[in-house]
Amino acid sequence: MLFDAPLQMKFHEASRRGRDYDMSQIFSGTLVEADPFHAVTLVTNHDTQPLQALEAPVEPRFKPLAYALILLRENGVPSVFMPISSALPMRIPAATERPMPLRCPLSNNSTS
View 1: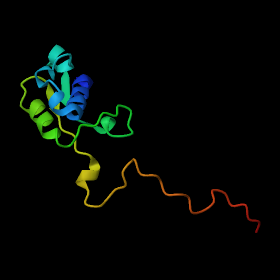
View 2: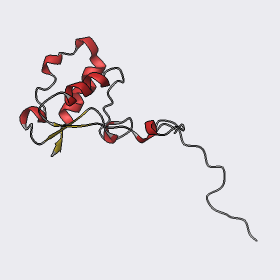
View 3: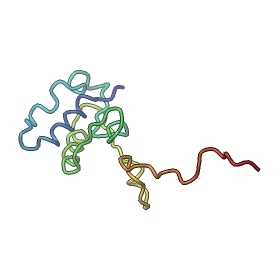
View 4: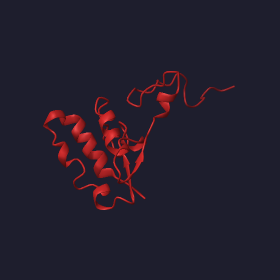
């Protein structure tokens, strides 16, 4: 099984371009088109989030359509990703927020 990164990138592009994107070509050049029995289709995962290796986030307004495309399609094995932060009731700082500055020295140079 292989993750269909080209399809995920097309979802990213379509979500950014909106009406200007030709949805009739969304599966062209994707793994699910070339090898439907070994393709894991995805809208997003931990690697496609902001500041990650394969950063290509899908706009929230487009996600329902993208999930409909992979969940209702006969070919491919759909993958649904739910970030851990959305499952928790507390607020978790986003990866884009700056870390808190150190409040204590890293080394203790005092003589006792």
